[in-house]
Length: 337
Ligand code: KG4
Ligand code: ZN
Image (cartoon, rainbow, N blue to C red; front, side, top):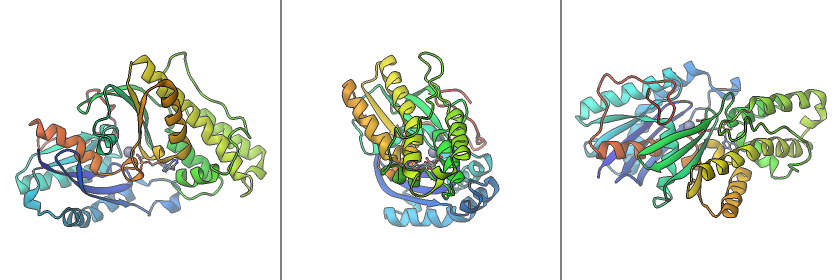
């Protein structure tokens, strides 16, 4: 067992954390980059530069908050992919430099396996196998978790991620980026059956997703009904739009659990903060007699505690990455690079 430093720079959160004994989070510092808001989406070059200037002060803060010295670090876990390549390179280069100077091993971690393991930080005894829905601005995947060290991709989105669809429609009505949390809030006062949006289920039994159709359908609806974008109409519009996405997410999560004989279902990723998604998943799991868990918001959105938690298992097992390890922009869970 050991003290692991986690580093996360795959997109627009710069994060550093210290995790001891695989599950004990001693610090979890997250800087959410604000520079992208005026562009309505993440600008990769700006994100890389922000990571570069923020990492060192965050490292100092993470050690101070954990009450440790850099000599106490036994190993370093860094996000290797998937993500924006320029952003990943900043974190990976930083981790390699630290590893060389502190003379401790480092390991490149799959970001999605990090999301999947975020549930271990609050539900360490959650049973296996379970299925996790990883749902964020960049990803929508169903992952079978056979142990905290064995992950298998069961399905993923063929086009937009669920959070991406929410953010893009939010942008059309003038909500700041990212729009997910504001949509969640507005939708709480709306009627989810007010407007009928399509549910894309794909082929019979498919565990893949597609959200570009419902996104286009919502954009066309706004074009034809401009009054739907007025403040008094937004709750119904967003309750209906997010329900079209969430219904499919929950249906496929439950189908995956049934098909793969899982004992429980879990949520992870930024969109897992959504109150309707949490409520519907919890109820569906209860109806099916399955266990349910979801992390608190600070472990849903991108963070380095989950990266340290994933890396800790590998480092404790004696695995590490070589100094010439490269960052990878695409990397499906459980698949070779
Ligand atoms: O995991 P994350 O921080 O970064 C990515 O890997 O993308 O997720 C960010 C995504 C954004 O699309 C944001 O709109 C969405 O999570 N999000 C939400 C909520 N809070 C954040 N979506 C729906 N409801 C929320 N409460
Ligand atoms: Zn993520």
